[in-house]
Every structure is written in structure tokens, then in C-alpha cells.
Image (cartoon, rainbow, N blue to C red; front, top):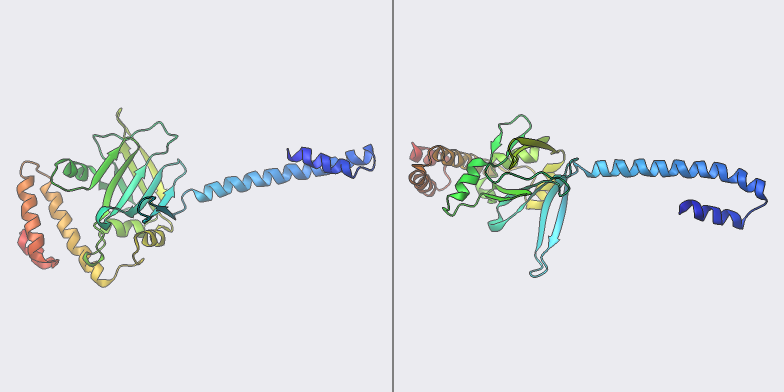
Length: 260
């Protein structure tokens, strides 16, 4: 279409067939070069848009409440988002590309790892949620999983998982397939910290009170994970840890003494 427009404008100023032919050749070459440069620019723009964290806003049509999420799409078209969910807790949405034929196994939760830190296995969260004890940590659909990464209360600390994500360089997910086997996909975390902070409405760096709260929360999570090692005694262990949490009133030493 662009070439036809060019010829029409050229005909309006023709000075003879020979002159027209001479003029057409260099302009056609220039047009091809511009088209090639535009194509390269589009490819570069699309590549830069991938693995680039940005804040996505969504307004509820019924309540007018604005929801913000920090979102990135990797080269495979898979998406990772961090947002505030029910109770202001921070959740992570890991979803596979709509164009992919892959599905997520309902029987095995993904594992993720940030940089060279310890891998985080979401399987205990899946099992704990399935116990029906009123604990909601994990949600599954064939193309995506949701998992809670932070309780959302700054005065109780951010937790190691959220801090690692905000300060990390990359995160890799290993997900099981319903038919057996697994695949992996990686997301960049470059620039994620400020974007996640904006989406969650928190500061980029934790305060001293938050760090103290994080230590308390880490000890509490470790105790709950120990409970999950034996599902036969899980209920009793869970009740004991919960009682110790209430008794400690966010004091780490009191919690540790209670759990001994």
C-alpha cells in the first residue's frame, strides 16, 4: 500500500517516463531500508517489552476499586504478577502462555528459585490448603497457579521470599506436567523491586521494625513447615504453633522459647 501511494504522488509530478524510472529506483531502495529498520525496531521493542516489569492497573466496574499488579512477561509468553489479594496479602500469579499447549499438574505444585538462594517448593502450601483448615495459600487452574508470598502486614515484616524477589536478578519456575515430566521457565527480576513496591504500596527497602518482624515470621513459617513433615500429627502441631504465636505477641525470643 505504501508503494502505491508513493507512485501516485510521483505521477502527479512526472517529468517524463525516463525521469520517473530514475526517481523510482532510489526511492524504492530507501523505502525498503526504512521498512527493514522499522521491522528491526519492532522486534527490539517487543524484546525489550518482554522481561520488563511494569505496573498494570485494573478498575473494578462494580466497585471502582483500582487494583495494581507488578507484571512481567518472558520470552516464552509466560506471565508473572505480584499483587494485593484478599486481606491485603501479597500473592504471586504464575501463568503459562495462552498460545502454549502446556498445562500445570493439579497433583504437584511448582518449585521456584531466585538467583542462587534456596529453592521454594510450593507443594507444602498446596497440601496445607487442601487440608481444609481455613488456610488459603495456594490456588490452581490448568494454566495458572496463585500462591501467597507475604501476609501483607508491614509491622510484622516482609518475609524472606518477598525480599528475595524484590532484590533478585532472575527467578526460575519448574512446573510438573499432567502427563508426567516437567518444564522450566525463567523471568528476569531486573528492576522488579521498585515496581513491586509501587504495586503493593510499600517502600523499596524494609525498615528496622519490618526486619524484626521478618525474623519472627521466618521462625513461625519454619515451625509450620516442621508440622507438615508428619501429616498424622499435623493438626496438633499446628494448634501448638498457633498458640505460641498468640502468646509471643511478635516477640521472637518468646516464640522460640514456647516452641522448644
